Length: 188
Image 1 (spheres, one colour):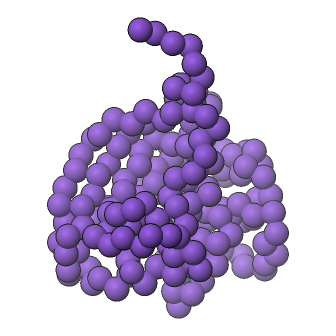
Image 2 (image 1 turned 90 degrees about the vertical axis):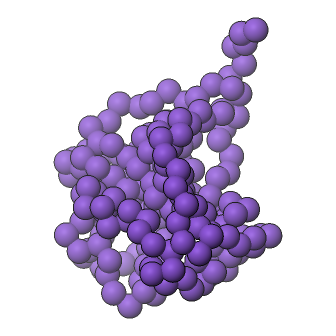
Image 3 (image 1 turned 90 degrees about the horizontal axis):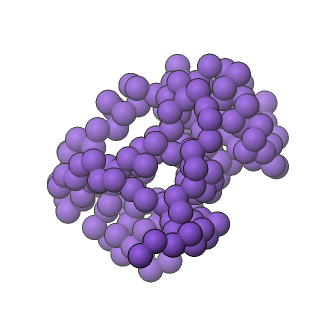
């Protein structure tokens, strides 16, 4: 039986000159961080325990990152800048900074125009709200989720409201990692 109910329609992709992908770690119950932004439950595992997540290869194919203010501020706590040689766009209506490594955009449409004007070809969308916005707008091409074997019960969810639209995904690959982690990659 066919239905024209818009709640089951995947958002129509918007025209753009770049490809957008996400690679992100989540708890088994779908949180990307605790409510206070803490990700120790994820970072407490060593790379040797988890194994190759494909992150280095993924980043080699990325020329631009698009993230929200909270993600940018979390990156600043790392003690090093992990995005040397990459353009970094931060979507925030409130961020004021003189950090020359980033460009701040005040709206999603401004971000898209900026990415296009900068010649972005392969964009890494990072941060819960930014990922949710790219999904809602039909602007995500690939989603890789690395799931940690931990239940947080509450926190910052990876997914949120999708404006009443289902987003259909196609499973491209799955693989077990070390320490009970799993990884699944989907195309949209």
